[in-house]
Image (cartoon, rainbow, N blue to C red; front, side, top):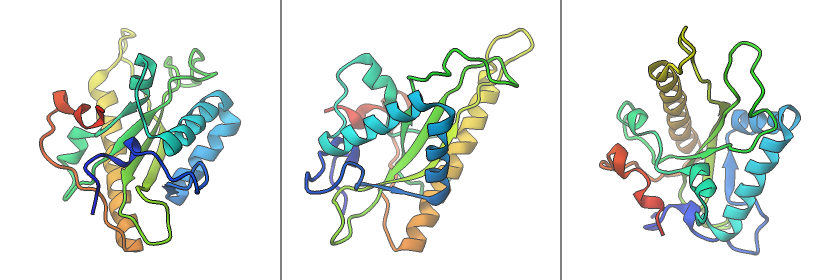
Length: 196
């Protein structure tokens, strides 16, 4: 049912538009489109990458490319979800707000888009991906100004669990299968599946 490679690695059919392989849950799409007014640099950077990866497949060339994507992602989250789906994470690393302090915290903005491989359907582009969550990753700080990694990681894991559950629900509602998460990988093996 699923190719050996994650869908993001596979070039798209040129007969389809740039983003035809991306399916969106409603909330995720609304949140992503809202970024256009809040931070156009981040929006345009993510959007351009999604279009390029849709056409050509993801092929990390530079260190910046490697920082922009992690898959599979959410090892800790996957262990807390029954029958978890394989999940990829697109990270925003170019932003007009990257040096700006948020109003309530000392941290810069960080955005995350969580996506999943879904089964093909006749008449649609092959190797589709489903986005169920686009959100800001909040960085928490301790009183001494250092990053509170435990609190930050816990919050991101909760977002990932929500994204996984949303993907499972979307697939159930739409009669689609998702690529299952397989264990291992262990945290140190997480990027193996994205190597070419």
